[in-house]
Length: 161
Ligand SMILES: [Zn+2]
Image (cartoon, rainbow, N blue to C red):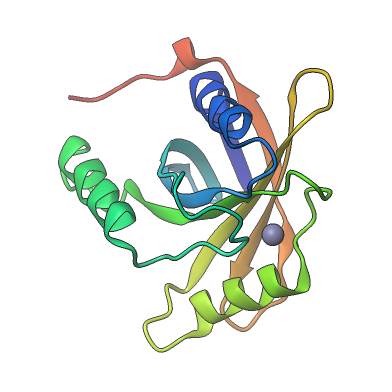
């Protein structure tokens, strides 16, 4: 699987990481399916309040509202624009998923109302400048695999509506 990461999304996430400093922050990822196995990250939600919690609360009101707004903005075209997964920061660790991260993602895809597949993205500011991130694909009944992240210039993106 490939994940396209547009510059505007990157910049926006980086700004949140700067503001949060040493706190872990995170939220949901919203994607556009461009081709089979190829997605573009088009939006994300962020919980800037929950402080030092490493794990996101997927069903919090803020995130649900953000997702509803995203669906409204993209014309409820769910086959193309949909929930893609979760992200959070690792300000003090490398951008590898922890065991707890892996378990919570597996719960998400395997669980009672499991979503079938979901992406986990972990991001971190570099010491001086720039931004590191890694992404993994979780599929029900399978081991997580690493996802290739491809940077993309925002102006390449064609927006509908
Ligand atoms: Zn983590």
